[in-house]
Image 1 (cartoon, rainbow, N blue to C red):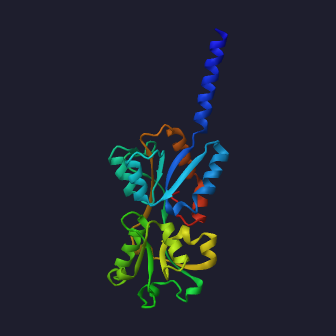
Image 2: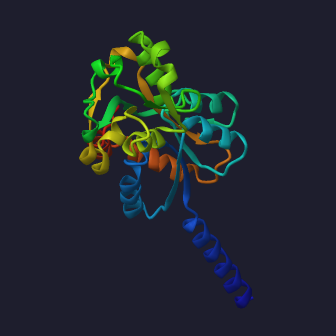
Length: 257
């Protein structure tokens, strides 16, 4: 009898250990790639919860979740893609005032970035210049920042003129790579990308007036099939805490609190 109890306790201990070691899997918008890793490391140090993040365009991540990808939490660069998952019954925002609406954790800013050695200082005048041969943007079909870029160019009545000169990247991180590598003269990218040490050293940016594009409200939802709902809530609470919101602001995201 004693040995049966001992074996049962050992088995329970092993199950608990395995559960504790299972990382929280986060699908994160590409604009968070320069921002999120140190925050997740702080979260791990405070809670003991390991987080594995995958960075990609929001639409691609939403499609992967719809196709059964094993994510627990989705941090989108907009509210539309997580709302689609809620409407499909595949995610929720449980714990918020309205569980049918994604939790807004930050707001994004669109900037025009160019290399310092390009002799094309970023400005609205640059967008109107014939010297601008290639302008990088993220795919507007899959990346909210790409959609914001098209909206801004449309507001300026420049989209039709610039369309033949657009270089389209898969996501906002790749957009920054295109212009930093010289494959484009300038790029409409996220402020989070422009403020990374690498791009801050090699280029300069101009903040696109916010009235030229719809607000980039970034939303989070918990994937319905997750077995780590409590850990996902803890990470969301951590992201919305005042200290972390302050860190997001320093990295180029507008806090929601």
